[in-house]
Image (cartoon, rainbow, N blue to C red):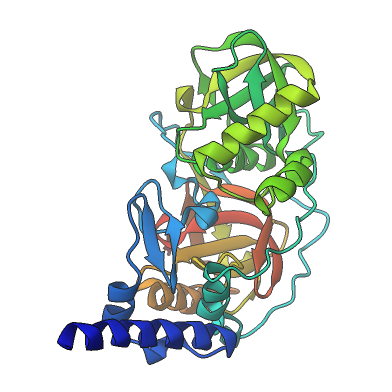
Length: 368
């Protein structure tokens, strides 16, 4: 009898979770302890809201939003270069919302976990960063591609093209067994070099003939087979292998100078922004993926700075709010913001609209 009551109680609690998602109720009505008992995620997944998300590198941030973090890129040499500012022609006009914009973070994540319809595939530019400035060492970084070697179909992966100052081009890749967020992180890391100063180095490059197709151009195949978009998704290995099979069928061949992303070396780069450059500071919002909080610092004569923290971190909101206050305090003064190992992102999808610009986690930001 007792066992039957326990089972009935569990079924009732699952019913409450489903109803809460359908009626936009707050998960705060259940304790974290109750949710953890009901939702058990097997590694490499972690519990987030009423579902599980991939966390392949076990850093307590859903991999779907980890592309924001360039800190996972290995860096060995330190040149301590400082970028004082990069001029831009247009400031982002993203709409600023108050902190209520993040109140439905968990509701949206719950609906996703319970199988609501996926959003339409978002258009992706061919280049995620590009410059015509002859002084830059990196000329462009493309969006992501899926590839398979022509002579050896076991050599497959995901990567992007980078244009170099000497007119050459390299293809930087990751294996399907690597952390699926790492190659996106690497692309955004290199995008920071397109916007500022600096140069990466590499070893163990090879020349290969590969079948290669842009990931965005494989959206229709992914939607037909799995009901999800290929672009902007960190996929399970079997889905990546499916995409590689599609690339072979499409048959676009290209000779590439190919480099494994772990064979890249990045010097340490710092961004320094004066308090006199600060134009406006947004309120806290979150990415539509649901696992990252962020706010944006709009700057005169530079791209915006987006400071982020994982929603799984219980102190993230408090720390980010404190940073916002500290940055507000130096606005219009000779104080400054220092950012270590920044990345750059053209499009960050948030509840407050699309953001763009420099990106750093809060532990990469220092206020003086």
